[in-house]
Amino acid sequence: MSTLNLILQTLHNLTRWVVIILAVIALVRAFSGWLGKKIYTSADARSGSLYAGLFDLQLLLGVILFFTKGWFGVLAADMSAAMSTASVRFFAVEHWLVMIVALIFAHVGVGAAKKAVTDRLKFRRSALWFVLSFLLMLAAIPWPGMAAARPLFRFFGLF
Ligand code: HEM
Image 1 (cartoon, rainbow, N blue to C red):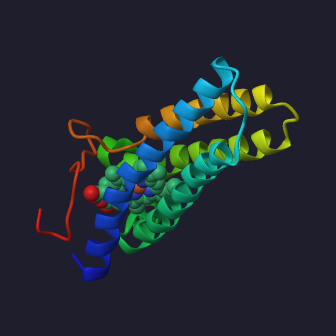
Image 2: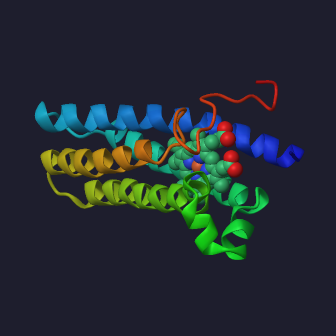
């Protein structure tokens, strides 16, 4: 594998954990604020923006990988063959499609919270959009045991 792919793949693998942790923080803040009737602070807004922002970074790394690892070529060469093998279909189509929907939900949550006029509504909108986004994201990660399984951690080809 090229050095560029090794670096991108390692970053995309490890950034996954950062995105998951940021999602959990944003969710805990949103739900505890909503159910605990708290005051919505700039830290609450920041936690949602950080989640959506790191998700954007994953998109950028993922899009580059999609082309440099040849997934676009696989899809363009024979779409029906790509769709008939689960491990190929996962990266050629499912992974990025579901992730983009999850990414849109994260951004919608940030925007909807910004526009809401009461603190309760800000928390509630964040909680609902972020939980949908998070569940989709978890479902589209290539966890060990899946047909398209990838390792939980990578470090530049050393492990
Ligand atoms: C948003 C759009 C995204 C695109 C276009 C994308 C695209 C890709 C591509 C092309 C691969 C390489 C597959 C391979 O040949 O090994 C990949 C792997 C992977 N993606 Fe994504 N991805 C996206 C988002 C995400 C997100 C949000 C996460 C998790 C938070 C994620 C987690 C992973 C993991 C864990 C791998 C395996 C990395 C490895 O090989 O170690 N992806 N993704």
